[in-house]
Length: 341
Image 1 (cartoon, rainbow, N blue to C red):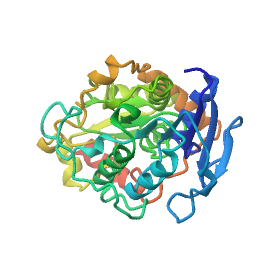
Image 2: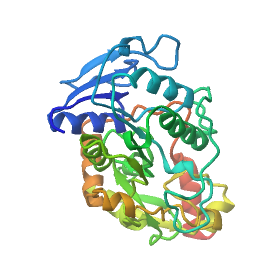
Image 3: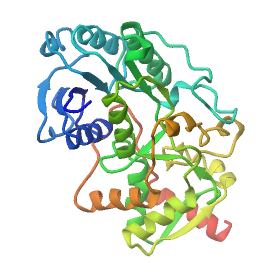
Image 4: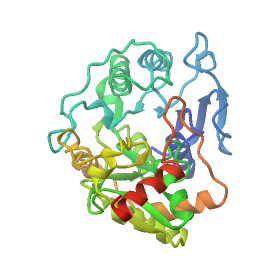
């Protein structure tokens, strides 16, 4: 459908920003609703202020009509439910960006769309910065959408790890920043360990293309199988930054003995344990069949570094722990790896 009127909830941070850019590039009229706190509005949008987490925060949307709404920012089910109810009379299609975190069990390979999900409640209230129930709340958000919109007028996408320019989590950015400083760099575990990473722009393109056709469904929006390895990913970072960094690979046993916190202190690293078996093996076959394509990982790394080198820095998502290992701690563990002491 050409020349659509699309409402994007949020639209100034990471996923929302990419969706706005893609929709504008396709000639759609884009309205954004946000609090005006995270980042600047994209030129060309109609920017509307509102906070759906507060009573009356959706007042600016009452009586408005759109061809579709895209919701990349919903974290609290009750907020999504209120939003859907306000929009339903004048908006025909609802696209919600969920997460593979809806799945509680990562022991069975692969995880697919009909794998068991957390129990969620569509009317659950809470603080969006409290991520302890992130997966269950995303399930509740999905249920909230489906309470209001028939399944043939709703799209649910469940991305895994998203990377690219304007990243607001910082996993990939920390590696690029650390590697750019050169010298010995502590690297985790086995360099051949697979990763499954999706460029935010590829996610945005998939969502907007589905919305253009009111194409409903539930999709794990991930590459159809691992698309890189930890070693290849970090190698791309060395190349992109032009650094003299030397990757020093530490056995997982060494990192665990030193109580290195997986994922946050050592970004993108998950130990090779039974509970993580399927972490990088989410089934993306349905999304691929529906048109999801993924650019080369090296292109994503290079573009992300180009953004960082031009002064780009993330606006961190509230409530998340700091990303990355401190210099002193890294030196101590490097000494242990290099000397055996």
